Each structure stands twice: as C-alpha cells, then as structure tokens.
Amino acid sequence: MSDENALRGTTGLCFEEFEVGADYWTPGRTITEADFLMHSMFSGDWNSHHVDHVFAEAGTMGERIAHAALVLSVSTGLFVRIRVFENTIVALLEWTYRFKKPVLIGTRVQVHVRVAATKPTSSPDRGIVTFEVSVVDEHDAEYASGEWTMLVLTRAGRELL
Picture 1 (tube, rainbow, N blue to C red):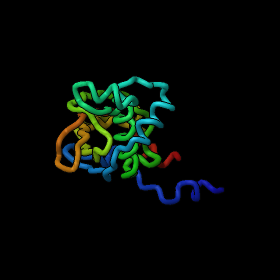
Picture 2 (picture 1 turned 30 degrees about the vertical axis):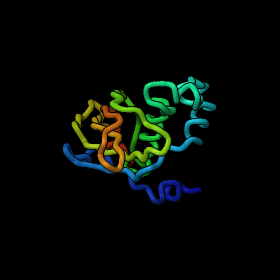
Picture 3 (picture 1 turned 90 degrees about the vertical axis):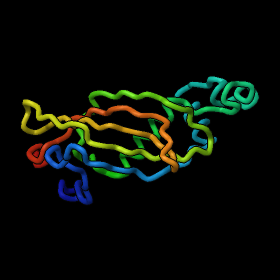
C-alpha cells in the first residue's frame, strides 16, 4: 500500500486549525447493561455498585451505576468519532475529570468539547491544544466535565507523514 493510500480519507485538524472557543459536539450513545458487563470483564472491576442489582437497589441510587472509567472510555470514543484528530494526534498529555452525577443504564450521553487554549511548542511540527469537555444527556444535564490536553501535529508535522 502506498503512503498516499494509507492517508486516504484523512480528516484530522492540525494545530493551527484549532481556534480558541470553537465548539464540537459528538454523536450520542445510550449506555447499556452490556457496556457495564463488558467494562467489568475488560477492567476486572466487579464492584457491586456496578454489577449486583440487589446490592445496588439497596444503595442510595437505587440501581447500578456506571464505572467512572466506563464514562471516560465512552466519552473518548465519542470524541474520536468526529475525527478531528484523525492522523494528527501525537499524544494525550493530561486528562482531568470531575464526576457530577452517576450514569445509569439507559442514560444517553453526548460530549460537548470546546477549545480552551492553544500553545505552540519549541518543536515546529507540533503544538498543544487544551479542551474543556462536558459529558451531558439529551436534556443537557451534566454528568462529568474536565479538561483534555493533547499534543497535535502542525501543518508542517502533517507533511512529514
């Protein structure tokens, strides 16, 4: 396969294309019982709050709650689906989250992402972009929020691919 074919369909944004204040919305996704179980299997986290209906029913929420790491994983996956980093992301540098309310089975989540800051680096082929991230439902109730700081290729760096 040629290099040209390997990059066919690329849609990622370069560092210079991210404007402070720009907003992005991901598609939505409903969290299911299968998500809870698959995450437990993958992570090994079988905490009763997530997988034991009888235990969780007696708790303060009255039902099972999603793993925090499941919410992080789903929000990341949703953001990737809008393809702004397709072949331009170099690394995730920092990730902070605050969880505001529990995600339950049947909650539909969507991610709102806003460019908070951009910062050139000493390397001409990459820059740093910080995003404010909010995980919300269809009524804009916020479940989690935080910041993602990413190292992203510049146009010059993209040309090196």
